[in-house]
Image 1 (spheres, rainbow, N blue to C red):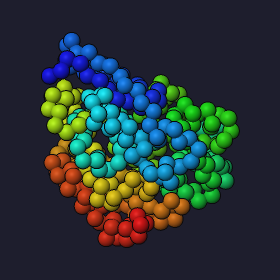
Image 2 (spheres, rainbow, N blue to C red):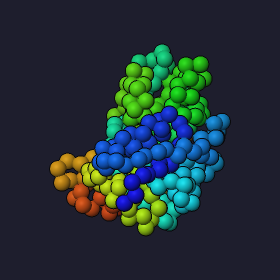
Image 3 (tube, rainbow, N blue to C red):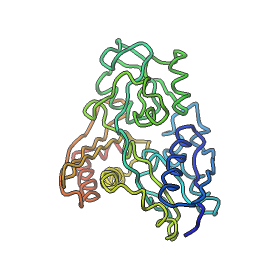
Image 4 (cartoon, rainbow, N blue to C red):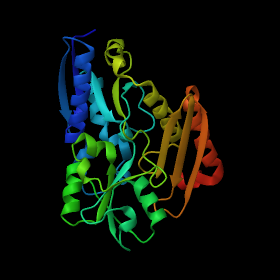
Length: 303
C-alpha cells in the first residue's frame, strides 16, 4: 500500500470540508499516511447563472475529478453522493460510503419561520428540479427563482433579496457550521430527499486494489445499503438532474424501506410509491420500485 494518498476535490468550502474530513479519517486509520488535497474547479462550479439540467446534469461536477484519477494526478476523489450520476462511467468505483449525515432538506429564510408561513406568491430559490417539483406540488402559487452557486453564494443571494426563501441540504449546512440558518427541517413526507443526500463517497479508478484497501476502513455498511437502494432506483429510471427524481431509504433491523418519487417540473404530476424487503436485497428493491413507477406511467415524464 502506498504511504501517501492524493484526494481530488472540488474547490467549494463544503467540498474541501468533506475532503479534509476524509483525509483526517484516513490518517487515523493508517498511521504515518501522508494525505494531500488536489483542488479542482469543475464545469458545474463554473456555471452560476443557469440550471444545470439544461447544461448536461450531474456529470458536470465530477468529470474533471475523474480525469485526475484516470491520469494519475490523484488517487481518490471525494464527493457528495447526491452530485453523482446514478451510474458511474466505466472504470470507476465507489470504494467507500461514509456514515450518512442528515438526509433531509432544510427551509432557510431571513423573514419566514416555516414553509407553511410563506405568503402567497413567495419567491423560493432553487436550481433543483426535484425541489421545484415538490414545492410546486405542495404550493402551486409559489414563484421559483433559479438560484445557483455554492451554499454561501446562495445564502448571499437570499440575504440580498433575490428570493424570500430557499431549500438547502441540512447536512451541508451542518458541515459548514451554518446550522443556525435553518428555520425548519423538512420531513421526507414534505420533501423527499435527493438520491444519496447526506452521504460522502470515495471514488477511485478500478483496478487500484491498494486504494480499495486504504479506504475500506471508512465504509459504513448501513449507509452503503441505503445508498445502493436509492441509486438502483435512479439508475432503473435513467434519471439525472434533468428529471425530478427523489428517493429515501431507511433500515429497521434487517428490513430496508424505500420511498421513491418521479414528478413533472411544474409539480402537477407526481408518481410515488414505497417498497420494503431484506437489507441484503437493497439494489433489487430499488430497481423493483422504479419498475412499479414506470408501470404506473412515470416513463412519460422521464421522456
